[in-house]
Image (cartoon, rainbow, N blue to C red; front, side):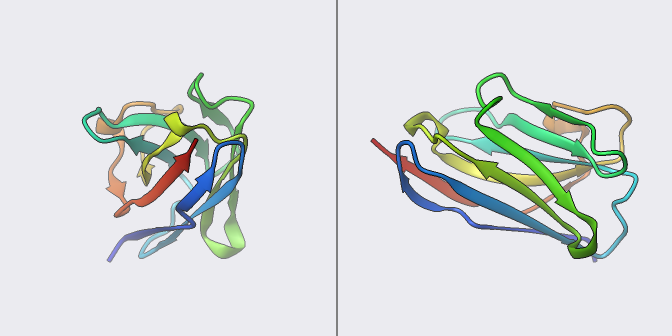
Length: 124
């Protein structure tokens, strides 16, 4: 059974940092792209960042570039999202996802597996 399990969310003040983790199990994701998406109340789910497991190629949404960093640890089957200089607008449920498509997909419909999400709340 394929599982993506997020952790690391919480409440933080504006300007603070959080690191989200996504631990994978149930299959090998070495040929996949691992992505982070987020969804705020009343808004569409939006792309945040993604990394190709093999080779490490990355892509970021403009709104988080220079503040967020995506990385992966093959030994731990885990993908991370380091979030710095957090803003209230970053408040959302953050989801980890895996895509078997080529390139770096940025649309949620191109992702095949999803985690359950972790809440990030940034207070002003």
